[in-house]
Amino acid sequence: MSYFLGIDTSNYTTSVAIYDDATNTVISKKKLLPVKEGEKGIRQSDAVFHHTVQLPELIKELFSDNDYKIDGVGVSVKPCNEEGSYMPCFLAGMSVAVSLSSALNVPLYEFSHQDGHIAAALYSADALDFINNKFIAFHISGGTSQALLVEPYGNYFKTIKVADSLDLKAGQAVDRVGISLGLKFPCGPELEKLALNSENNLEYIKVFRRDGMFSLSGVENKCSQMLSKGCKKEDIALYCLSYIYSAIDDTVSELLEKYGNLPVVFSGGVMSNQIIRNKLQEKYTSFFAEPQFSADNACGIAVLTSICNKGK
Image 1 (cartoon, helix red, strand yellow):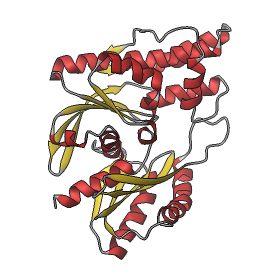
Image 2 (cartoon, rainbow, N blue to C red):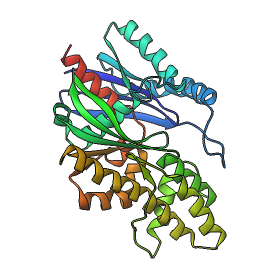
Image 3 (cartoon, one colour):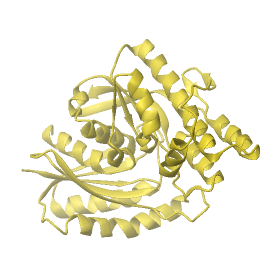
Image 4 (cartoon, helix red, strand yellow):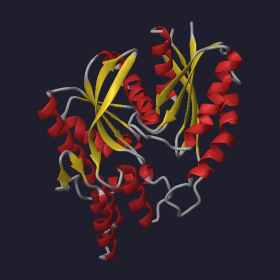
């Protein structure tokens, strides 16, 4: 029996997880970073500070019920695998991971935050064997709205970006519209509840696209106009989700036509939305992370640490 520790300090969540490779189970602890009421985000300097405070607390809590013998430590060190990808918030997790690896005399494995999201989705969907095959992965969150071609490489996989948002990210759109409707940040769960009370249905909306890229900035302007005209908040919330769904739907169709009928894996906090999820599942061979594995978490990092440790 081997245990592997994963650490992720994203822009909005501090998280730690332990993966037991003998039982294929994950135990995790996570905590959102505090965002002041009415604000749409958090400064990186504040994020680093809060991660520094919260990370030791979560690790202590994680180990409080069991004296795990850790065989490897994994950590997210950057947002994605693109050149120049960097955010200071990941330094908090990196410093703790390096210290633990040295103190425990176990290997240290570095991944991108996006790698962790993909692995968490595969684990959650009981599809870890996808790591040995080609598939398309969507990472739709507050910081990223991308589609990736994923191929086996080394011990796990490599990613090639094949679609992206030209401007606003899906999670940003959800939060900006949600805040305008008086919802609490992060607004995803409350916006979904509001949309479920609309008497309308999820609809297809023509979204601006260019060379595989899509634009989401229009949804904020349209929802603002709807609010000023006195439209129901429930209908505005549903329109926002319809807009995001339409952008994803068009992109999936285009990529499947280009790369063949590959499986599609969805990850990221926005993809925990059941309205969007149900509609996509009706149309495509798709796999989704369960809600607890959709938003930022260290579970995928812990799983990847186990996989890489086996292949060393």
